[in-house]
Structure formats: C-alpha cells, structure tokens
Length: 128
Image: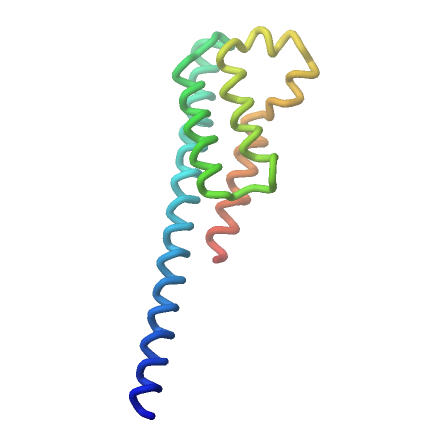
C-alpha cells in the first residue's frame, strides 16, 4: 500500500512540474511577443520623427514579427490584436495609400492604442 501512495505522490509531483513547465513556456512566449511589439512601436516612433510616412520594409518586418509572436503566444481576443499588428505591417508597405483612405485607416490602430494593449497584456502576465 505504501508503494502505491508513493507512486501516486510521484505522479502528482510530475503533473505539477509539467504544468509549471507549460506555464513557464507560455509566459516566455508572451514575453517574447511583448518585447517584439515594443521594439516595433519604438522603432516606428523613431522612424516617423525622422522620416515621416515613407514606406519602410524594415518596419513591415518588425510588425510582421510582432504579429507572428503574438499569434504563437495566443494572447488576444480572437481576430483582434494580431489583426492590428498585421495591418500595421501592411501600412508600412505603402503608408500614403492608407493615409488617403480614411476607412482603411480605421484598421490601423495608433501606436498609443497598441502600447496600451501591450501594457494590459503585461499586467495580466504579472498577475499570473
């Protein structure tokens, strides 16, 4: 009977460790996504201040990386946050086309809005 209890205890410990590893892996993915979002935001602000709204393939890549990391981390309401990031990437392919079309600009959230969303995700991460 003691062997059975020991086996159960070891199994329970293993399950707890597995859950802990999964939580750590999830937090790592979320952290990676947030870092990439912040890099994209900072680099975009810098670029706008120095160059205005000219096409920029590097910013497109930064926003696509943020999109990809966010998708992998699954830190959003369905079809919301990743779409904002994806549209930011498309915007930097040719900003002038987007800026001419007010309805298209509704799809491109401001850097401040994206920053706020990233902050709210960080707060949730810290509370876990």
